[in-house]
Length: 429
Image 1 (cartoon, one colour):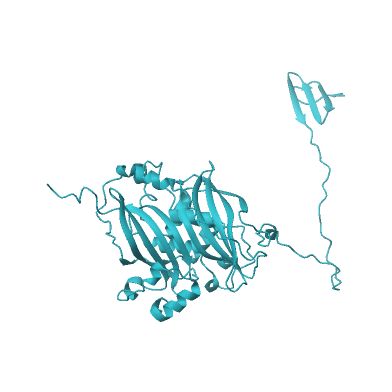
Image 2: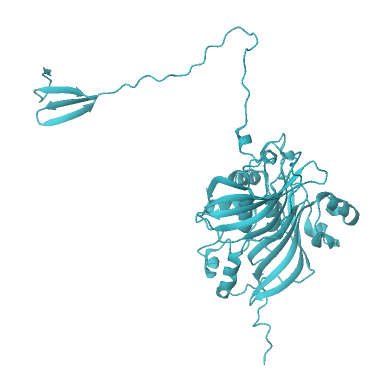
Protein backbone atom coordinates (compact mmCIF):
# COMPACT_ATOMS: atom_id res chain seq x y z
CA UNK A 1 0.00 0.00 0.00
CA UNK A 2 1.02 3.64 -0.31
CA UNK A 3 0.60 6.58 1.99
CA UNK A 4 2.02 10.07 2.37
CA UNK A 5 4.21 10.90 5.38
CA UNK A 6 5.52 14.17 6.79
CA UNK A 7 8.97 15.47 5.85
CA UNK A 8 10.97 14.84 2.68
CA UNK A 9 9.66 11.36 2.15
CA UNK A 10 7.17 11.27 -0.67
CA UNK A 11 6.23 7.69 -1.13
CA UNK A 12 6.85 4.91 1.27
CA UNK A 13 6.42 1.37 0.14
CA UNK A 14 6.41 -1.14 2.94
CA UNK A 15 6.48 -4.83 2.70
CA UNK A 16 6.61 -7.35 5.46
CA UNK A 17 8.68 -10.37 4.74
CA UNK A 18 9.80 -12.77 7.43
CA UNK A 19 9.22 -10.23 10.18
CA UNK A 20 11.19 -7.42 8.45
CA UNK A 21 9.50 -4.18 7.35
CA UNK A 22 11.33 -2.28 4.60
CA UNK A 23 10.65 1.44 4.07
CA UNK A 24 11.74 2.97 0.80
CA UNK A 25 11.71 6.75 0.62
CA UNK A 26 13.56 9.17 -1.54
CA UNK A 27 17.25 8.38 -1.42
CA UNK A 28 17.89 6.22 1.68
CA UNK A 29 16.37 2.82 2.32
CA UNK A 30 15.65 2.26 5.99
CA UNK A 31 15.38 -1.25 7.40
CA UNK A 32 13.48 -1.72 10.60
CA UNK A 33 12.76 -4.96 12.37
CA UNK A 34 9.30 -5.48 13.65
CA UNK A 35 9.28 -6.96 17.14
CA UNK A 36 8.67 -10.69 17.09
CA UNK A 37 6.75 -11.65 20.16
CA UNK A 38 7.77 -15.14 21.29
CA UNK A 39 5.26 -17.59 22.45
CA UNK A 40 4.60 -17.05 26.10
CA UNK A 41 6.62 -19.47 28.21
CA UNK A 42 4.98 -21.41 30.94
CA UNK A 43 5.62 -19.84 34.32
CA UNK A 44 5.45 -21.83 37.54
CA UNK A 45 3.32 -20.15 40.15
CA UNK A 46 2.61 -21.94 43.41
CA UNK A 47 -0.99 -22.22 44.40
CA UNK A 48 -2.19 -19.97 47.20
CA UNK A 49 -1.91 -21.57 50.61
CA UNK A 50 -5.18 -23.01 51.74
CA UNK A 51 -6.58 -21.91 55.06
CA UNK A 52 -7.21 -25.56 55.79
CA UNK A 53 -4.54 -26.66 58.31
CA UNK A 54 -5.21 -30.35 57.94
CA UNK A 55 -2.29 -32.79 57.67
CA UNK A 56 -0.26 -32.65 54.43
CA UNK A 57 -1.08 -35.44 52.01
CA UNK A 58 2.44 -35.85 50.54
CA UNK A 59 6.10 -34.96 51.19
CA UNK A 60 9.54 -34.93 49.56
CA UNK A 61 12.64 -36.58 51.00
CA UNK A 62 15.96 -34.94 50.13
CA UNK A 63 19.08 -36.69 48.92
CA UNK A 64 22.75 -35.75 48.95
CA UNK A 65 24.41 -35.63 45.55
CA UNK A 66 27.84 -35.89 47.17
CA UNK A 67 27.00 -39.45 48.20
CA UNK A 68 27.21 -40.40 44.52
CA UNK A 69 30.81 -39.16 44.30
CA UNK A 70 32.16 -40.52 47.59
CA UNK A 71 34.50 -43.48 47.61
CA UNK A 72 32.64 -46.72 48.40
CA UNK A 73 35.16 -48.77 50.38
CA UNK A 74 33.12 -51.92 49.85
CA UNK A 75 33.97 -51.65 46.14
CA UNK A 76 37.50 -50.25 46.53
CA UNK A 77 40.44 -52.25 45.24
CA UNK A 78 44.20 -51.98 45.23
CA UNK A 79 45.41 -50.02 42.23
CA UNK A 80 42.09 -48.24 41.71
CA UNK A 81 42.69 -44.78 40.24
CA UNK A 82 40.45 -41.92 41.34
CA UNK A 83 40.35 -39.20 38.70
CA UNK A 84 39.72 -35.69 40.03
CA UNK A 85 38.09 -33.33 37.50
CA UNK A 86 38.89 -30.14 39.42
CA UNK A 87 41.77 -27.85 38.43
CA UNK A 88 43.33 -24.77 40.00
CA UNK A 89 45.51 -22.06 38.51
CA UNK A 90 47.77 -20.77 41.25
CA UNK A 91 48.84 -17.15 41.17
CA UNK A 92 50.88 -14.90 43.44
CA UNK A 93 47.84 -14.12 45.59
CA UNK A 94 47.64 -17.78 46.67
CA UNK A 95 51.26 -17.72 47.82
CA UNK A 96 50.75 -14.37 49.55
CA UNK A 97 47.79 -15.72 51.52
CA UNK A 98 49.81 -18.81 52.45
CA UNK A 99 52.84 -16.81 53.59
CA UNK A 100 50.56 -14.59 55.68
CA UNK A 101 49.68 -17.68 57.74
CA UNK A 102 53.03 -19.55 57.78
CA UNK A 103 56.54 -18.15 58.10
CA UNK A 104 58.86 -18.74 55.15
CA UNK A 105 62.47 -17.58 55.27
CA UNK A 106 63.97 -19.69 52.46
CA UNK A 107 64.72 -17.46 49.48
CA UNK A 108 63.92 -20.17 46.92
CA UNK A 109 60.25 -19.47 47.74
CA UNK A 110 60.45 -15.72 48.43
CA UNK A 111 63.08 -14.21 46.07
CA UNK A 112 63.00 -14.33 42.27
CA UNK A 113 66.66 -13.23 41.83
CA UNK A 114 67.80 -16.00 44.20
CA UNK A 115 65.71 -18.62 42.38
CA UNK A 116 67.07 -17.41 39.04
CA UNK A 117 70.62 -17.96 40.31
CA UNK A 118 69.66 -21.66 40.33
CA UNK A 119 68.27 -21.35 36.78
CA UNK A 120 64.62 -21.42 37.83
CA UNK A 121 62.31 -19.02 35.99
CA UNK A 122 61.29 -17.27 39.22
CA UNK A 123 60.61 -18.07 42.87
CA UNK A 124 58.71 -21.30 43.54
CA UNK A 125 55.49 -22.02 45.35
CA UNK A 126 56.27 -23.07 48.97
CA UNK A 127 56.91 -26.74 49.73
CA UNK A 128 54.28 -27.05 52.47
CA UNK A 129 51.71 -25.31 50.29
CA UNK A 130 52.24 -27.81 47.47
CA UNK A 131 51.99 -30.68 49.96
CA UNK A 132 48.70 -29.27 51.25
CA UNK A 133 47.35 -28.93 47.71
CA UNK A 134 48.42 -32.49 46.84
CA UNK A 135 46.63 -34.14 49.79
CA UNK A 136 43.44 -32.05 49.60
CA UNK A 137 40.50 -34.32 48.87
CA UNK A 138 37.14 -32.79 48.05
CA UNK A 139 35.75 -36.24 47.24
CA UNK A 140 36.18 -37.63 50.78
CA UNK A 141 32.88 -38.62 52.42
CA UNK A 142 31.94 -35.58 54.49
CA UNK A 143 29.29 -37.57 56.35
CA UNK A 144 32.02 -39.41 58.25
CA UNK A 145 34.73 -38.04 60.52
CA UNK A 146 37.59 -39.22 58.34
CA UNK A 147 40.94 -38.66 60.08
CA UNK A 148 44.37 -38.03 58.57
CA UNK A 149 46.82 -40.40 60.26
CA UNK A 150 50.06 -39.76 58.39
CA UNK A 151 51.82 -38.56 55.25
CA UNK A 152 54.79 -40.43 53.76
CA UNK A 153 57.28 -40.04 50.92
CA UNK A 154 56.44 -36.40 50.19
CA UNK A 155 58.65 -35.20 47.30
CA UNK A 156 58.70 -31.87 45.41
CA UNK A 157 59.50 -33.32 41.98
CA UNK A 158 59.37 -30.35 39.60
CA UNK A 159 59.08 -26.62 40.22
CA UNK A 160 55.65 -24.97 40.45
CA UNK A 161 55.51 -21.27 39.56
CA UNK A 162 52.77 -18.65 39.98
CA UNK A 163 50.45 -19.05 37.00
CA UNK A 164 50.73 -22.85 36.74
CA UNK A 165 47.53 -24.88 36.43
CA UNK A 166 47.44 -28.07 38.51
CA UNK A 167 45.25 -31.16 38.80
CA UNK A 168 45.34 -34.23 41.04
CA UNK A 169 45.17 -38.00 40.75
CA UNK A 170 44.73 -40.52 43.56
CA UNK A 171 45.54 -44.24 43.61
CA UNK A 172 44.52 -46.69 46.34
CA UNK A 173 47.69 -48.45 47.49
CA UNK A 174 46.71 -50.31 50.64
CA UNK A 175 43.62 -51.28 52.66
CA UNK A 176 43.57 -52.76 56.15
CA UNK A 177 41.43 -52.97 59.24
CA UNK A 178 42.29 -51.10 62.44
CA UNK A 179 43.38 -53.11 65.48
CA UNK A 180 39.84 -53.10 66.92
CA UNK A 181 38.46 -54.23 63.51
CA UNK A 182 35.87 -51.43 63.52
CA UNK A 183 37.54 -49.02 61.13
CA UNK A 184 39.28 -49.13 57.76
CA UNK A 185 42.71 -47.60 57.18
CA UNK A 186 43.39 -46.57 53.59
CA UNK A 187 46.72 -45.60 52.03
CA UNK A 188 46.22 -43.35 49.01
CA UNK A 189 48.93 -42.29 46.59
CA UNK A 190 48.46 -38.58 45.90
CA UNK A 191 49.95 -37.03 42.78
CA UNK A 192 49.87 -33.45 41.53
CA UNK A 193 50.34 -32.66 37.82
CA UNK A 194 50.82 -29.45 35.87
CA UNK A 195 49.11 -28.51 32.59
CA UNK A 196 51.82 -30.40 30.65
CA UNK A 197 50.82 -33.53 32.59
CA UNK A 198 54.20 -33.56 34.35
CA UNK A 199 54.36 -34.85 37.92
CA UNK A 200 55.27 -31.94 40.21
CA UNK A 201 54.53 -33.32 43.70
CA UNK A 202 53.80 -36.76 45.12
CA UNK A 203 53.17 -38.36 48.50
CA UNK A 204 51.26 -41.14 50.26
CA UNK A 205 48.42 -40.25 52.62
CA UNK A 206 47.05 -42.62 55.28
CA UNK A 207 43.46 -42.04 56.40
CA UNK A 208 41.11 -43.72 58.86
CA UNK A 209 37.46 -44.26 57.94
CA UNK A 210 35.53 -44.79 61.21
CA UNK A 211 32.84 -47.47 61.44
CA UNK A 212 33.60 -48.78 57.95
CA UNK A 213 34.68 -52.34 57.19
CA UNK A 214 36.10 -53.72 53.96
CA UNK A 215 34.89 -57.15 52.80
CA UNK A 216 38.45 -58.37 52.15
CA UNK A 217 39.46 -57.02 55.59
CA UNK A 218 43.13 -56.70 54.59
CA UNK A 219 45.28 -56.28 51.51
CA UNK A 220 48.97 -57.05 50.98
CA UNK A 221 51.31 -54.26 52.01
CA UNK A 222 53.33 -52.63 49.23
CA UNK A 223 56.41 -54.76 48.60
CA UNK A 224 58.77 -51.82 48.61
CA UNK A 225 58.76 -48.10 49.12
CA UNK A 226 58.27 -46.22 45.87
CA UNK A 227 59.46 -42.62 45.83
CA UNK A 228 58.83 -40.14 43.04
CA UNK A 229 61.96 -39.09 41.12
CA UNK A 230 63.37 -35.88 42.66
CA UNK A 231 64.09 -34.01 39.42
CA UNK A 232 64.17 -30.70 41.28
CA UNK A 233 66.88 -31.89 43.68
CA UNK A 234 69.08 -32.89 40.74
CA UNK A 235 68.47 -29.45 39.23
CA UNK A 236 69.48 -27.71 42.48
CA UNK A 237 72.68 -29.76 42.84
CA UNK A 238 73.65 -29.20 39.20
CA UNK A 239 73.23 -25.41 39.43
CA UNK A 240 74.42 -24.86 43.01
CA UNK A 241 77.73 -23.35 41.85
CA UNK A 242 75.76 -20.29 40.74
CA UNK A 243 74.44 -19.58 44.23
CA UNK A 244 75.29 -16.27 45.87
CA UNK A 245 78.00 -16.34 48.53
CA UNK A 246 77.18 -18.30 51.67
CA UNK A 247 75.28 -16.14 54.18
CA UNK A 248 77.09 -15.47 57.42
CA UNK A 249 74.08 -16.22 59.62
CA UNK A 250 73.70 -19.91 58.77
CA UNK A 251 73.35 -22.05 61.90
CA UNK A 252 75.88 -24.83 62.48
CA UNK A 253 74.05 -28.15 62.77
CA UNK A 254 75.56 -31.29 64.29
CA UNK A 255 74.32 -34.83 65.02
CA UNK A 256 72.43 -35.41 68.31
CA UNK A 257 71.64 -31.71 68.57
CA UNK A 258 68.20 -30.72 69.88
CA UNK A 259 66.97 -27.29 68.71
CA UNK A 260 64.28 -25.44 70.66
CA UNK A 261 62.67 -23.14 68.09
CA UNK A 262 61.50 -19.79 69.40
CA UNK A 263 58.80 -19.15 66.79
CA UNK A 264 55.26 -20.26 67.63
CA UNK A 265 51.81 -19.04 66.63
CA UNK A 266 48.27 -20.33 66.13
CA UNK A 267 46.94 -20.98 62.65
CA UNK A 268 43.85 -18.93 63.53
CA UNK A 269 40.23 -19.33 62.53
CA UNK A 270 40.31 -16.98 59.52
CA UNK A 271 43.39 -18.67 58.01
CA UNK A 272 41.93 -22.13 58.65
CA UNK A 273 38.70 -21.25 56.88
CA UNK A 274 40.28 -19.19 54.10
CA UNK A 275 42.96 -21.71 53.12
CA UNK A 276 40.58 -24.67 53.50
CA UNK A 277 38.13 -22.99 51.14
CA UNK A 278 40.86 -22.02 48.67
CA UNK A 279 42.13 -25.61 48.47
CA UNK A 280 38.61 -27.13 48.61
CA UNK A 281 38.67 -28.82 51.98
CA UNK A 282 34.99 -29.27 52.84
CA UNK A 283 35.03 -31.57 55.87
CA UNK A 284 32.49 -30.59 58.56
CA UNK A 285 35.13 -30.70 61.32
CA UNK A 286 36.67 -27.60 59.71
CA UNK A 287 33.50 -25.53 59.33
CA UNK A 288 30.32 -27.03 60.75
CA UNK A 289 30.40 -27.35 64.53
CA UNK A 290 28.29 -25.93 67.33
CA UNK A 291 31.13 -23.74 68.58
CA UNK A 292 34.57 -22.65 67.39
CA UNK A 293 36.14 -24.69 70.21
CA UNK A 294 35.04 -27.87 68.41
CA UNK A 295 36.58 -26.94 65.06
CA UNK A 296 39.80 -28.60 63.88
CA UNK A 297 42.75 -27.56 61.72
CA UNK A 298 43.44 -29.92 58.75
CA UNK A 299 46.49 -32.13 59.14
CA UNK A 300 48.34 -30.53 56.23
CA UNK A 301 48.04 -27.12 57.89
CA UNK A 302 49.23 -28.51 61.24
CA UNK A 303 52.33 -29.85 59.48
CA UNK A 304 52.85 -26.52 57.69
CA UNK A 305 52.65 -24.63 60.99
CA UNK A 306 55.21 -26.97 62.58
CA UNK A 307 57.62 -26.64 59.66
CA UNK A 308 57.23 -22.86 59.54
CA UNK A 309 58.28 -22.66 63.20
CA UNK A 310 61.65 -24.18 62.17
CA UNK A 311 62.21 -22.08 59.04
CA UNK A 312 64.33 -19.31 60.54
CA UNK A 313 66.69 -21.59 62.48
CA UNK A 314 67.21 -24.04 59.58
CA UNK A 315 67.73 -21.34 56.91
CA UNK A 316 68.81 -21.73 54.02
CA UNK A 317 66.76 -24.71 52.73
CA UNK A 318 67.08 -25.57 49.04
CA UNK A 319 65.19 -28.87 48.92
CA UNK A 320 63.15 -30.94 51.35
CA UNK A 321 61.37 -34.29 51.53
CA UNK A 322 59.07 -35.66 54.23
CA UNK A 323 60.04 -39.30 54.73
CA UNK A 324 57.18 -39.86 57.19
CA UNK A 325 54.87 -37.66 59.24
CA UNK A 326 52.38 -38.78 61.90
CA UNK A 327 49.47 -36.68 63.17
CA UNK A 328 49.23 -37.52 66.86
CA UNK A 329 46.79 -35.07 68.47
CA UNK A 330 44.03 -32.80 67.26
CA UNK A 331 44.61 -29.07 66.85
CA UNK A 332 42.05 -26.28 67.16
CA UNK A 333 42.51 -22.98 65.27
CA UNK A 334 43.34 -21.12 68.50
CA UNK A 335 46.04 -23.60 69.63
CA UNK A 336 49.56 -22.16 69.61
CA UNK A 337 51.97 -24.34 67.58
CA UNK A 338 55.73 -24.41 68.11
CA UNK A 339 58.41 -27.01 67.38
CA UNK A 340 61.62 -28.74 68.40
CA UNK A 341 64.01 -30.43 65.97
CA UNK A 342 66.45 -33.28 66.64
CA UNK A 343 69.40 -33.65 64.21
CA UNK A 344 70.17 -37.27 63.33
CA UNK A 345 72.92 -36.81 60.75
CA UNK A 346 74.71 -34.12 58.74
CA UNK A 347 76.82 -34.88 55.68
CA UNK A 348 78.25 -32.91 52.79
CA UNK A 349 76.69 -33.62 49.39
CA UNK A 350 78.57 -30.98 47.39
CA UNK A 351 80.80 -28.04 48.08
CA UNK A 352 78.76 -25.53 50.03
CA UNK A 353 75.78 -27.88 50.47
CA UNK A 354 74.90 -30.34 53.21
CA UNK A 355 72.20 -32.97 53.67
CA UNK A 356 70.53 -33.01 57.08
CA UNK A 357 68.34 -35.82 58.43
CA UNK A 358 66.16 -34.60 61.25
CA UNK A 359 62.95 -35.16 63.17
CA UNK A 360 60.67 -32.22 63.97
CA UNK A 361 58.02 -32.40 66.67
CA UNK A 362 55.14 -29.96 66.39
CA UNK A 363 54.04 -29.03 69.93
CA UNK A 364 50.93 -27.09 70.89
CA UNK A 365 50.22 -24.69 73.76
CA UNK A 366 53.72 -24.57 75.25
CA UNK A 367 56.31 -21.79 75.29
CA UNK A 368 59.06 -23.94 73.80
CA UNK A 369 62.21 -22.13 74.96
CA UNK A 370 60.85 -21.29 78.40
CA UNK A 371 58.97 -24.49 79.27
CA UNK A 372 61.45 -26.99 77.77
CA UNK A 373 64.74 -25.17 78.42
CA UNK A 374 66.04 -27.41 81.23
CA UNK A 375 64.10 -30.59 80.41
CA UNK A 376 65.79 -33.66 78.90
CA UNK A 377 63.44 -35.01 76.26
CA UNK A 378 63.45 -38.79 75.69
CA UNK A 379 65.40 -39.77 72.58
CA UNK A 380 62.65 -42.29 71.74
CA UNK A 381 60.45 -39.38 70.69
CA UNK A 382 62.77 -38.81 67.74
CA UNK A 383 63.89 -42.27 66.64
CA UNK A 384 60.71 -44.30 67.14
CA UNK A 385 57.26 -44.05 65.58
CA UNK A 386 54.17 -43.92 67.79
CA UNK A 387 50.44 -44.24 67.54
CA UNK A 388 48.38 -41.85 69.64
CA UNK A 389 47.69 -44.28 72.49
CA UNK A 390 51.29 -45.50 72.61
CA UNK A 391 52.62 -41.95 72.66
CA UNK A 392 50.40 -40.78 75.52
CA UNK A 393 51.22 -43.82 77.64
CA UNK A 394 54.94 -43.21 77.04
CA UNK A 395 54.73 -39.50 77.83
CA UNK A 396 52.74 -40.04 81.01
CA UNK A 397 55.71 -41.93 82.45
CA UNK A 398 58.70 -40.28 80.78
CA UNK A 399 57.76 -36.66 79.96
CA UNK A 400 54.41 -35.54 81.42
CA UNK A 401 54.81 -31.93 80.28
CA UNK A 402 54.32 -33.07 76.67
CA UNK A 403 51.20 -35.15 77.34
CA UNK A 404 48.45 -34.34 74.83
CA UNK A 405 50.68 -31.61 73.33
CA UNK A 406 52.69 -33.35 70.58
CA UNK A 407 50.67 -32.89 67.39
CA UNK A 408 53.14 -33.87 64.64
CA UNK A 409 56.21 -36.09 64.32
CA UNK A 410 57.88 -35.34 60.97
CA UNK A 411 60.99 -37.18 59.74
CA UNK A 412 62.67 -34.93 57.17
CA UNK A 413 65.62 -34.97 54.78
CA UNK A 414 66.77 -31.49 53.79
CA UNK A 415 69.48 -30.05 51.57
CA UNK A 416 70.66 -26.63 52.70
CA UNK A 417 73.56 -24.25 52.24
CA UNK A 418 76.34 -25.22 54.59
CA UNK A 419 78.09 -22.74 56.89
CA UNK A 420 81.30 -24.48 55.83
CA UNK A 421 82.87 -24.93 52.39
CA UNK A 422 85.55 -27.23 51.05
CA UNK A 423 87.92 -24.32 50.41
CA UNK A 424 87.60 -23.10 53.99
CA UNK A 425 88.68 -26.48 55.35
CA UNK A 426 91.92 -26.72 53.29
CA UNK A 427 94.90 -25.82 55.51
CA UNK A 428 97.28 -23.12 54.30
CA UNK A 429 100.52 -24.47 52.81
